[in-house]
Amino acid sequence: MKNFKSFLLLGLATLMFQVMNAQKQPNIILLFSDDAGYADFGFQGSKVMITPNLDKLAKEGVKFKQGYVSASVCGPSRAGLLTGRYQQRFGFEENNVPGYMSAVSGADGPNMGIPLTEITMGDYMKKLGYQTAFYGKWHLGGADKFHPTKRGFDEFYGFRGGARDYWAYLSSPKEELNKLEKGFGNFKEHDGYLTDRLADEAIDFMKRNKKKPFFIVLSFNAVHTPMHATKEDLAKFPELTGKRKEVAAMTLGLDRACGNVLDKLKELGLEENTLVVFSNDNGGPTDKNASINLPLSGTKSNHLEGGIRVPFLMKWPGKIKENTTYNYPISTLDLLPTFFEAGGGKSADLKNIDGVNIVPFIQGLKTDRPHKELFWRLGTRAALRDGDWKLIRYSDRPAELYNIEEDPSELRDLAVYYPDKVRKMYKQIYHWELTLERPAWLLQKKFEKVDIDRMDTYKLH
Image 1: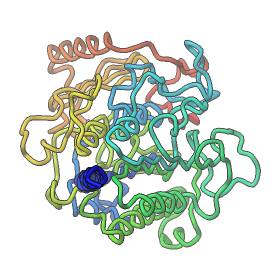
Image 2: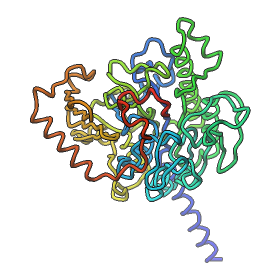
Image 3: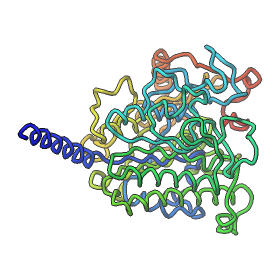
């Protein structure tokens, strides 16, 4: 009897510890849009877009005025996000679009993904005891070995490829990787509008795991092409026409889906213990979906600010002050260490990452810059942000130098006035490149002579 009581007390103590630990660990949700314009949200100053839910999120947390991605196109940007490492360190440099790439080291089509040697965000969060889920666009390898459920995520509902219809396919899509899938290998098309459906799946996961710490990546394909919107959402923009009307309606649908998730958090009593981030994968393409990146120059696929600076919000009640802004440059590379340490992990357990935990900087506990340097590279073109200065290296014309603090629109090239700084920053890029791997796949030869700044003209998802 005595042994039974001791065993019972030990069991109760263990259970209480687990419950208390779960309560301390915040739930974490990453809301991630696709190809959205920098200026295409109310919280970014738009007077046309209707985004009340994301505007509310901005007021309840911090808005990053200089939030960057690690690449100006979808696949590499997502690879950097999921690993917290410059994706060039493991060869994921070019966009992984089957049919537009030539293989190097045996990589082709579905086999263009994050190497299995890399540790993902999902892997790290599972180690901390989180229930993990990924919903929406994966685009990080279509082969079974790269499947989200084999890369750290307990649940998956979405598609393995880079772009698909928002309505259900009546027959198999041209690209098999864009079929809708639940779990592993269970392919079945959805009912209704996909943006709403993805949010519904995330909500269902939250309800089923409300007593456990959970981690959700809600990776919308909105507002990436094809331009599909509901009739009801289109009707909200009678003053607009063409693609601009369509992207406005798709953005409204995106905002509604985010709002449904955030409302359910509150309804479940989880809002006060949940860290929420909203961001986007790269700059908006101004041609394909009529995104607007103003006042930034540039667009998706290039290294001007409009290609790599994105809307970026974070809310964490009790940890981050409401309705604030943060001005120093941060990156989506920072989200992995930020989430890991927020969940109770130790920075020493993160292996070879390039991101940093940005919470102490937001809180004012650290007053220096999170990053002295940030790098980008695609082929022979590269860029470096060093403090307030930015150098863009081209293969077919002289480098450009800008002071981003004074000239965020990059209208005044100062390279001719600061030749010593240009040389110094060239060397910084060169030394960084020495730490990188060769690209695992490349643009096919027919694209080699295309101006890389105009690459988005082609169908690169």
